[in-house]
Image (cartoon, one colour):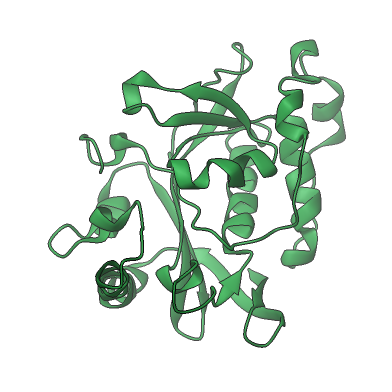
Length: 248
């Protein structure tokens, strides 16, 4: 689908494409993201997911080869601006015990869309748009937009601003904080991102009316501050289940 990113150089929205990841995208990612991460590392930039893209690791290959993982990219002018990987199988919710959530395995904006000592990010809104796609996939999987993810600490505030509920560090995932997005906040996220894509989507009214009582306000603290879609900082969620081993 056609979506919008904000071009920091032109100071205006520009069109891009959000599509399922293909082998061609994997090739582009390995040719462009890997050397750019190394350049940033040599320039003393701090990317928590740097080792995932280290030469010889090629983490994105594992994303596409892992059975059941669905992956998407945002692409503009032949460059991949962001990556999203989702679990194919919903898991039990930790926020509302009787429900299930779709797990975000990996979410990242391109290295040139992250803050740098030499200048600002090239494009914004990438992470927010991809999370909107995650909500749509969650709806299709019968989870009514619910999402779950483990966040690298540099991205914690990003998820809080999008009203994800912070359920605290998860000892099983090396202390990474676990976040969930409720049905109501998934609907709010879709509503906020309608101007960023060409779709007209919403959660079914009947589904909204039949929500469990405990989901009416499951995490009020998470909605204390909701910012405009913004990709000024890197947005990543990781889970070791992609490779079966801990990720750096």
